[in-house]
Image (cartoon, rainbow, N blue to C red):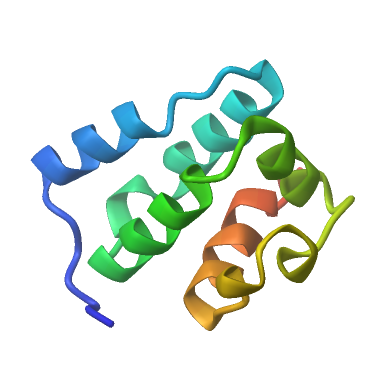
Length: 94
């Protein structure tokens, strides 16, 4: 997987693609981009794209930890997807 940082155009496209139908998912995604947009790699973008292929309810279940990747889609049980999911779930540090 590539460790190259994504460029501004690719980041903009990714942010547009990540718009969701559930506000709860949008909140996780907005927080993700606030924290990580400056350091996202091509590999991160690909893994996030795989998560965005999921339905809203499955994505929310993953974000909230109600389901595992294996329960949602065994093909997603990959190190890169697990890393990006962890980034999505990362709580706000106070």
